[in-house]
Length: 156
Image (tube, rainbow, N blue to C red; front, side, top):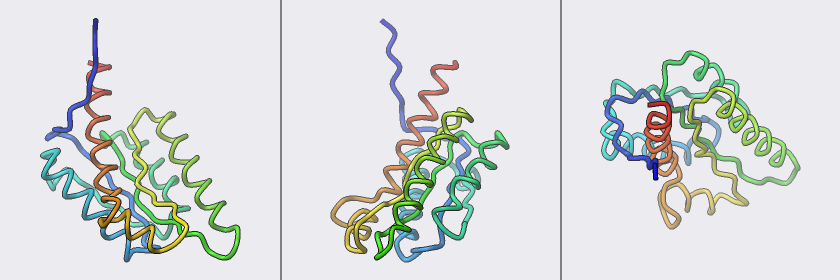
């Protein structure tokens, strides 16, 4: 039986992190969690991490698509926060961001990890950015590391 399991050490990996400036008071924590996990757990060199800031969550898919097309990165982590407001704008942004990132990952064969918080309120966002519910930026980085190694093993 052949079993492929991903490891989280990927010291030679090149990883891009695309992060939204909108709600940066939360996204800064997601970014710090992702970088800490890549460096400390994945043993990725700081020189192999590229951070790209974009205006909002809606701009994440286009930027991720362009980065994936360069073939420079073994994985791309998308970070952002979409918080429900008083209008339906929230639904459109969250849906397009999620679908766009999924589509890019499938078509590019580059692991695209989803560290975008989609919450009902600010309290839920803070909980997922490093308090009660962990740090979703860190979790997205762990997923990226594991997927880098799984894909490497499959193609190997």
